[in-house]
Amino acid sequence: MELRKTVAVITGGGTGIGRATALALARAGAQGVVLNYSRSTREAEDTVTELAELGCAAVAEQADVADDTQVGALAQRVLDRFGRVDVLVNNAGTTHPVPHQDLAGLTDEVWHRLLDVNLLGPFHCARAFASALAEAGGAVVNIASIAGYRAGGSSIAYGVSKAALLQLTRNLASALAPDVRVNAVAPGTVATRWQTDLHGEAAFTERARAERESVPLRRTAGPEHVAEAVLGVLGMDLVTGEAIIVDGGKHVVY
Ligand SMILES: NC(=O)c1ccc[n+]([C@@H]2O[C@H](COP(=O)([O-])OP(=O)(O)OC[C@H]3O[C@@H](n4cnc5c(N)ncnc54)[C@H](OP(=O)(O)O)[C@@H]3O)[C@@H](O)[C@H]2O)c1
Image (cartoon, rainbow, N blue to C red; front, side, top):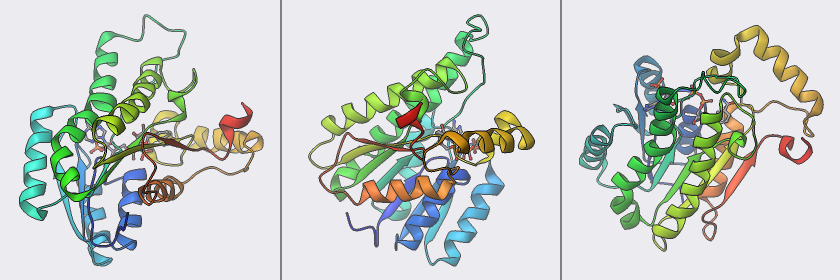
């Protein structure tokens, strides 16, 4: 897929991995980038400014991906503005830390919110943009997690939501073929606010240092490493239904 002159929608695009992906797409010549956000207005607007400085037509659009009505309205605004969509990056995600042994603490409320945002959100967006993506011969990339492969991560519900997202990736790859490719990128630990929100700055610095000792590539990923994989898989024209793990080789040795 040629990324020059494409229009991309990135959910959760104002911060972290979404922001890094937006900047990488702009540097690759994307004509337009839509940064979806739910609460982080200032971050989304700051990223719009950065993208404009790269010559990319960028807009920030508020919508809670868990809400299908809001996603439908988002799709309409995007199509009114740009008239096409080539790339959808389903990056928006949320978590709520609950120790895995604390089954009582993992309430239905937590389950519903995590599944609504992390699983139904990508489905809502894929459904809303499916026709436009098909018309453009486009592609979807879902941001999953290594927590979708093993019994780790911030809660059981988070890991299950990401495992389901990997399956949704395969299902949509089949359902939207031959016009639209659908792949996933599954990061391990990535140095974004996600980690510092979960653990605090000092504890995350120590966790990352400890992790580097056991990870084969001996490095902690930045959001730009995940963006690199997103752009890589977007460029692979005969790959669909696949997931690329970006964790410095952690999953090979755990
Ligand atoms: N950092 C890691 O270690 C790591 C590892 C594996 C996977 N991931 C995945 O990577 C993705 C991005 O995370 P990140 O590390 O870049 O952290 P982040 O900066 O906190 O990004 C999360 C993004 O999701 C958006 N978001 C959350 N709920 C939303 C909703 N209901 N509707 C629309 N947007 C919503 C947030 O925007 P608002 O603030 O506006 O809500 C934010 O921009 C997530 O899917 C996460 O599960 C991260």
